[in-house]
Image (cartoon, rainbow, N blue to C red; front, side, top):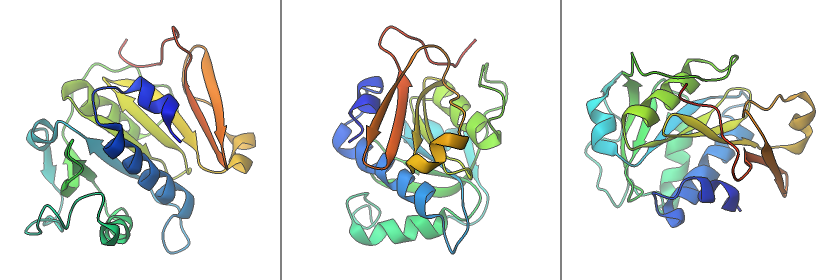
Length: 198
């Protein structure tokens, strides 16, 4: 479903990356308890991300087995959706294990050129993807999912086509739009350049 995004981010296993994007889209689409929520998933480079972040509260994922925290565990999805209501980012290893939750990303000083109008969650995601090997998947409270890789905005996903009429694309330069079911997926056109490091 997310082939155009997977082509942009080739460092990680698509069998793990794609379900993580799907989870982010579900959170953007469903919200929680009748309200929209935002969150950040960092994917890959988890040791670097842990070194550039700190816990905001006691880690709700600490002490659980890797098998129970793996993206493929169907019981985990509901837990992650509940935890997404809390402040902070999720750290997900390249193997698909949720390593930590509720993390404050300490990324001051990263040189970024992020489109105006994106908030602190997006800035933190772009910055952590600049200074670590991680990809950041940012769920906005406006129901948009954005993917940052190497500090660049590499994809935007609108989870409901009816939202498209009130949405402004943040990707810079020529873009490719792909409709998949009710989703609209925007990625830089091959040879085009996404916004990012200045």
